[in-house]
Length: 377
Image (cartoon, rainbow, N blue to C red; front, side, top):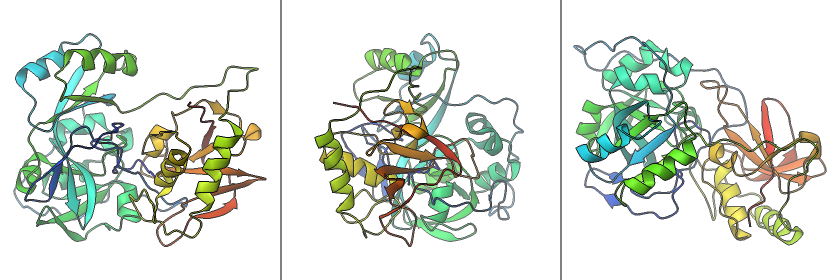
């Protein structure tokens, strides 16, 4: 399930890019460039939050992380496969509507055998761009500064990177010191810049952009026109489309809906695997993307992006083929973290969680986020 949680497809990037051009380094790092977002995954069950829980610092003398002074939020990600030039950074900073930018290191890193969207950050400043509960968790950021990694809720649960464990990352050992959601969709692991250097991540090849008073889609278009072609711009928090009162949104043709449902049903019994997008194993958003792809519909890879792929419709007006979404991540209750396809007759088909398989079950409404009707041509 694509839990926000920090995860893979869409990442780097977190990313809604269809082509995948990557460079594999000897360290096991995959540099992100024009990459489609990684799958976000999450169990559709409630579990105790580990927000703020961290293990003892792994390095004794570590500079204290600065206290949170303000909350900014991130709206766009600017990404390259190499260090961004001063000219590119200045161009982004000078764009109308941009309030602040935060340089980060971004890449897909092989952690415990999984390709994980990872960023290297300055904990003192990066925390301002994360959701409130995460931003305020001093112990979490001190853990990162001490050399540990913070992993997303989905990666920590369904991905098997349990709190306190030591895992292989880029050919070295990395300790999971905290579990929390960063609210940036495609990010599933966060380390300090010092740790990122040790693991071989590219340096300052990405920028988080804060632009609270500007339409993110319009800003993306403006930046894409002025920046070099190899520099990608991604909207991190796409807006959903509300249904106009008294209007029923268009739907896919019956043939396409039948193709989607038939394709999904053909995978009944397929195992759930974190980050998997078929054809033999799936996470929740990977199953949705794969099934709609069989009908010629290209959907984003991660759950929170899929939530913006069509207009929302009332729960009582659901039709077969509509997408159902839930907010189940206790480390970020506002985040879209699980999705399923409505089957009809009160049933839905989904890839539920690690240890389970693709199945048809009754629809439940606990922590329901909404229903989206895909109507792409």
